[in-house]
Length: 135
Length: 135
Length: 135
Length: 135
Image (cartoon, rainbow over all chains, first blue to last red; front, side):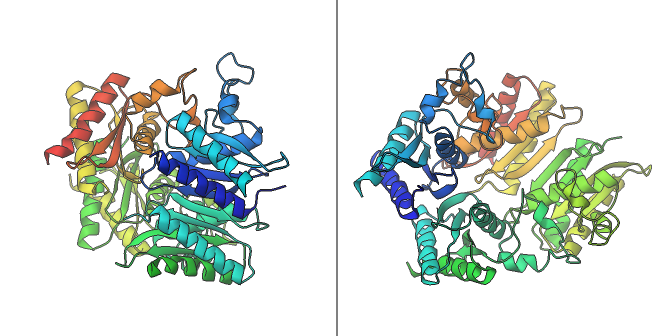
């Protein structure tokens, strides 16, 4: 099952509202179950470099059905999948990418957030991912 | 001047509504004055290949401040800028990319639409671009 | 022999002055004998898409020691080197790229101009290339 | 606000003079607020590999509004944004990239320098960035 455009947009907007309430300027991307871009918004004055990072966080999260921060624990020097970031045309392995799950527990996409601290990005992404369960 | 996230989103949503009223499934991208992605939405069941085409249409339109269809008239075999599509990491030179102008006549970004016929894509993109003038 | 930074800069500035006198907004790139970027300037409000086109024109001109417009006559459908634009990470085969020759007749680099019509671009590039012979 | 071509050129030339006074051979790139190349010069006999490094330093600095050396402190193994260099088509995260700010404190572009030691590159880039405040 794929996230619908309606839900992708609502996840992006929920994340954006959360970011605004936290006074953080971010880029927010949602990909579908096929890891293809579904919805995106860049807040005014957020980092230009965060466009690509947000999209790559969302893709990375869906590629491996994992929070990107958890992936990062395994990719360090000496880690079991060291430098996997070089695959798939570039992965991002620090926090801010989170799978999106429907009420049945099925992963239907992922959300990536970039522009704040990694803690803020993860918080905003998680909020966006969970927001669609309320519908 | 750069298009704001509020206007970028409203242009995308206006274009999406227009596409729905025409029964066409499209991808819609808005870039800012620097040709950087600002907002994006992919309608359910629209072509996967149209994600990149929509983004490239928006970028192409802003790169040269032109309707992409007008660019295409110049890039055909025998045309004065034949094969320019190979520059800038890939341009799209058929209709569906349109500059976005503010009330003062300044170009503040561009919109790209892909998924329908080139006539439909252009119509939807133009509608989205003009929609922000009503605000 | 390589064009020096002093001459590369003076060629760029001569071309820029010429463009200003013609009321054309362009990007101007100079590459050395090794086809590596040596000097570049983007005039305010010139096309964003012309950055890459100007650099590729300069490189193309030096890659084959030819005016890019002359190359284009050979790359059309049915032409003897059809689609050579796909090589070298993207060539540009319409006017605006011109080899730079020293007083001894040796090619020491090339200049690429993009932003005006192809006639204007070629005129400005030629002016820039010849300007260094006056020194 | 975008850095003008006049200021971009003057920043490049100020940095070049500084490099000459320090006997260092460098490449110097300036990008505008949209992270697009605005001016560039390569000093004679400087490293060929520094062309791309200088441009990527300038872009990286503007992508995240940061001195590239400060970014590098966060991207090491164990760092909070380890391997972010793989995003945005390649970032550079060691010293030599510095944001350019106008008198009002607004970031209007960035400068990247490569060819000397990282201390030298940073010193030259900073000198170039500050030089425009004297105008």
